[in-house]
Image (tube, rainbow, N blue to C red):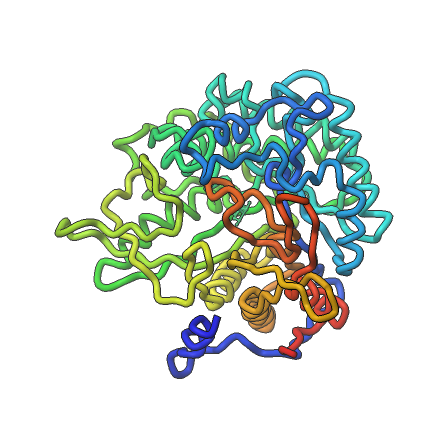
Length: 490
Ligand code: FCB
């Protein structure tokens, strides 16, 4: 920790330190926290849930750290009432959670599974009863396995099925949900799922990854238009992207940024918000695919008016073109694996970043968040933004204090959050229309390929007993929410 602080203090002269305190957030700004179904629910066979690609992947040897699976996870499915009480205790104003498609349609098609709908209805009603806004994500990566067996996101049919699924959920909950987010981080679904193979379904086919990008975009458009037809209240419609903040390095940095920004950011933002695909990226990838899966009318479907753009932010990425000498560096922060997450950009080099780092090895750089929010606002001034994820993994230790209370003194996480809330506030003072902040994550959980080895929660979960313990960061956050201003350190 000390080392982190010293490094964090070693800012270049003139750079903001981002550890302000007392900054006040306006009324209406929504403080919440986020989770995702497969990461917390467990109960994978309960009440008719079908298998998802993450069940298959996590049960495949060698795919997830330590052979961990989401079979039990935090057992949230059975502990929903006490978890809701915990949210209330923290004073959360919103809760971002995802719906497991295979609980609603066990094979991804056909009639709704009543027990699955009933579970989420109970959750939503439990939130409303506690005055917490439900922010629903329809897809946080747990695709029904049966759809993957038919080609998954490489198959247009999956996008059509997603529209039907959205309608089913909207018909049931469309009078109560405050914000509908269609997809979480389609970048990960497409490039880690079908390109690098680090995520389920673990395919390593560059052309498949690009087809997945388009079908995910299409799925978003179909879902928003289906929801619009069935909801009866006046919710916000959104999508959550993990937009990458690239820093150019040296003479070739600008070209490298153009290439990876195209793949990671513009292949989503341009169709979603402008109704176009970036010509330069189609050209860069012409040797991999001819993009003939884009059909007439698709771009019109994809470009739906959005009430909010969800932004997930963790760190920054430094790139340059590889000069072909020595071994290419690959510090892109994503679990290394067989394939590539960057189809058509194999000659881009990812350079290590200066610290401090979180337990993921991701560099801590709150200026990236400020830059990202400001640049989105400048490009699309009429699209309000919401931070739908931000947070950090550290190796937490549970201690028993003199008063016999279990405590987790996670000063590093408080410092991380404080600096990112400061960055968000700075962006707002520069005119960014930022509507809220959902801390990742409410509780420690199954961190995908890293299993249970990385703890992102502001609430600690003991995976033996499933006991929840508020970390100091949870208490700090509760105070921020109560006072609506960034607390100092005590
Ligand atoms: C994001 C995911 C989320 C969690 C955090 C750490 O990419 O959306 O589920 O894994 O990273």
